Figure 1 (tube, rainbow, N blue to C red):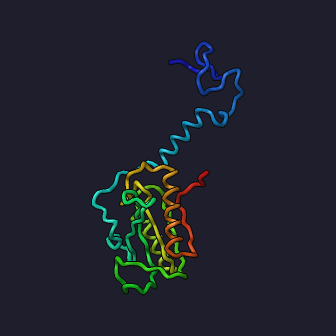
Figure 2 (figure 1 turned 45 degrees about the vertical axis):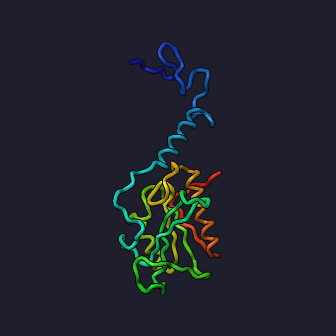
Figure 3 (figure 1 turned 120 degrees about the vertical axis):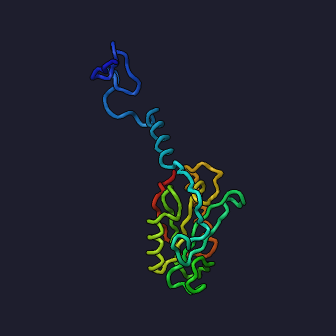
Amino acid sequence: MSIQEPDGAGPAGVSCPGSPSSDTPAGPAPSGSWMDTIVQKILQQLVTAQHLRRPFQDLEHPSKYGMRKCQFVKIPVDGSADSFITGWLCAPDKYEGDADEADVEVKIPQDATVVLYCHGNAETVSQFHRRELYKIYQKQGYYLLAFDYRGYGFSSAEVQPNEDTMVKDTQVEISHMVKVCYPWIYFHFSWLLCHA
């Protein structure tokens, strides 16, 4: 075992990669260095790491998760039947359609306010803390669309989730919402970084 010298030189004055040497000023590695690239790749993989899909989930029936006045939706990506995003469209508590049925077909009026909920990349729309948030929006009188990115939940699994696919999925959801009718869309982003 060798002990590194304080100036960053290894044994017998051999310079160690990534450490300062007598020729290099001390301080953080310059931007764009190989270390920045490695750290960026590792962080990207950690942020978008897929969790194991839970067996026996029935996301097609929100009522099995204690949700009322919600509809399971499936939205194609790029018009493909093999690439799609799934989620729950929830109506407000005061919704008149189908009385108090559990799993309903939600029809959104033109003047409605809709919240597009982009949850974090882990797990599914069915997580307890997310369902509690949906209920708050429902009590406040809002419609809400929560979706799972491709690779999660019941959404198609043809892509390895990453920042680009998550941004693309969000853009697909926004386009879908605008096409269907919604002049007033509020976004609730738990996780979505600015994408350059």
